[in-house]
Image 1: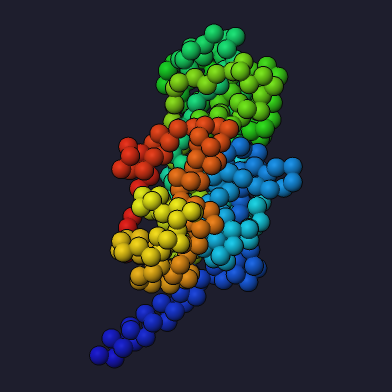
Image 2: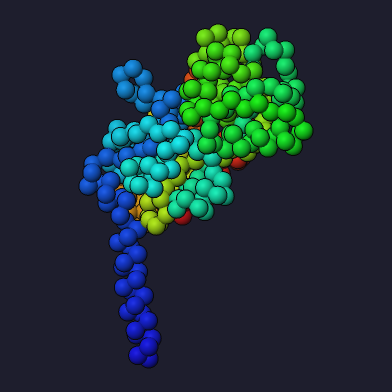
Length: 338
């Protein structure tokens, strides 16, 4: 019996210790008064500041949603522009609280960097852009072509894999940043430019003569993009993960920025749990029970953020495709809030 009491006491101590440790990131953010978000800084539709320093993008809106959930203020975010090379180090060192920078979820990144991917906020795949004058209609016609690509990315690895698998000769022209790679392509230093298909849509708009270029039809990889956090803080991991799921759930049940206050009066039990009028699901995350209502009111649901930043309401005009909800032919699917 004594051993049982000792075990119970030890479990209580360990549980309390874990609880304190798990609240570290959220407490640090609250004490600081703002969220530090690792962002892209050069990619239209995902993370880009304008001339006045105002940030927009799908990943930007995700960080604003986190700030809304915590502070009831989407503007309590400091965006830290990061290159592909320094993005993981910045998160590991604590320079940023979350990395929301069009980052591909891979097994090695998930297991060897001390980091956790939380959810997929954009399902993507790698493609190619070429000049129309090259008269190429397929990536399979790029044998012996010079391809501009960013170093240290899954893009570079996928490119080599694709050419090797198709027994094609490859000439890579590598650059430290995506911006340098795009400028080199625009200056005709290579025949094609490769990155995620969503990135191609945005980068094409930056070229000197946009209409002189086409995006080839092949998608050569799976690029599940999503926010990343450090290992060791389960509460923060849960908050970041469920912020995405709340936005997806809101879209599924038709809860929008314009009707969220009216929907808070709904008799639908799933909407009541989402918006915090029933249950204590926010409290379980260390947040107010109206945390998801705050997100929708300030930022919108997933569909609203998608359309505004990369969809038909944006310059990119990307179709929902596999990023549609699960009940509309896509892959966006949220576990239930209950």
